[in-house]
Image (spheres, rainbow, N blue to C red):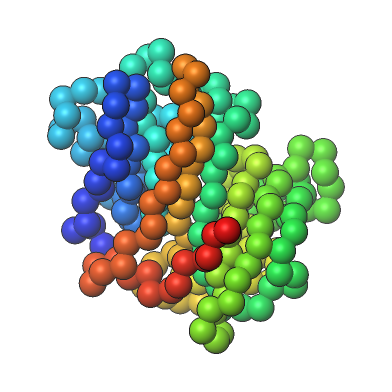
Length: 215
């Protein structure tokens, strides 16, 4: 288990920290894995206020509020779906379609898994496109419009292209889960923010795949 990579502060201002979360770190401490909030509290002596979360095996941008007012403002923005989130993923399987939408209600399945249903009563919604990598791999740019548990992992499994390294959803075994929170765009107290953090690619956390060409 890789724990020797620490988080890093990408941006800090009077409202929030933007953290680059490594794989195998939890947001809030809930097992033997290190916690980003605990690390940040020890580093800054300020109590961090979580605005959203990332799964333990997912890397990338994590927004943490500094003040109660900022926490309320940013949490409401997430609740109202006024935050644009973009993720990168890689699969070694060919998807049923190369771009479009993945929509459906989600329901608990076995062994802590979730499954995508055909019904659309309260659906998970993800917009995506894919791009070519060296065979047999394919890259995905994913924009979730909702925030369901394991939404992106279930979405790609439903396409027949589970994320590389996602052993929970039948992905091919790999050194890590190849899912990365790449971009965040939002407003806070009238200020507009847009951030991008590319995946780390080093000896401890390898992402040896090309990034998409964004127009």
